[in-house]
Image (cartoon, rainbow, N blue to C red; front, side):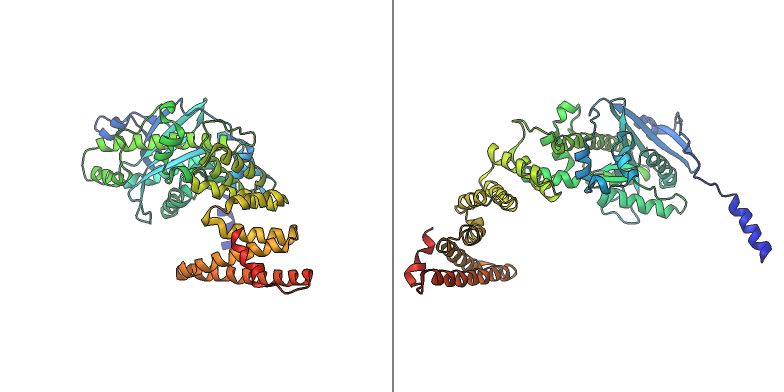
Length: 442
């Protein structure tokens, strides 16, 4: 037994103490028969798992933008002091960033879905270096994943658009299924879909990357356009047709689509970075609804002071009617939480004209006049008004919302009884019907 243990210890000693250094891959010219490689302008990349095609291009736009520490803190959803030293160092160093976008054999994901084209990009010489790894058939997947792992070892901060939900889980599954390539360890993963949705959903409704390019990023200035772009739904079929011996030309449009997604992703980060920076100074070109979205995003991330400023700027710039009252509602809540009760009351009075928020305004004004001003008669008037509005909503609401309105009506009824008791104690007489009948004329 001792001899067997000795043999195992000798074998263990042969194991390298650290992972081998990643060797730089070189590209060779494709052969004349490799139509796909020549069509894409690709070279053939070789590693210990075989071959794949690699397309490399450098673009001067979008230009490099240095990330602001405030933006990184908000995007990573962690305070600077609790971020690990490794993660902070990687986040603050743009040379460690890797933009990623995949084109796959299916949009639903799953173990049978392959990423046949993996687009990578990183900042280089003030512009964007793009590398696209292409599988000519499924047998080249190991080679592509090995190259991706090498890139992530160099640049462990991943930047994607919906990558936390789709791209990275898919790639993690593919790494595991190889049984020979370890899933790369990320220092951080910044998914720009979530901040983009928070910032622009009020103005655009949809926040697809192509819509953001058209409405927010100014693609003409960036130097590309989407005319003639392929549909994402068609991409899997183009690849399957190619595998069955079909024409490779449609995949040239897929490669261009992937390039534009990567450039759009880098440009989107620059836009978000400018909006989230502490020293951001919105000019006249900023839309009021974008500032309203910024206010919501900052408030959820705990930056209450900047959230209030952005919301106030949104109101000053002008908002559609349905958003104006919502912005005032948020400003009133923020003023109340910061102890500015009189300012909050002024805003609640302005909100009363909007039927959607009138109930909450009445409730808040009842609380304000009871607890802050000690004007029980005025508080009683607003409590009665809130109770009547809630009773109407209980009768109109569906079965799911009815219980919530009923609970609030019960609270208003208790508040009315309490206020009537205080007024009786103060005046020394019972309230008559006339004392409360004018509550709706506020």
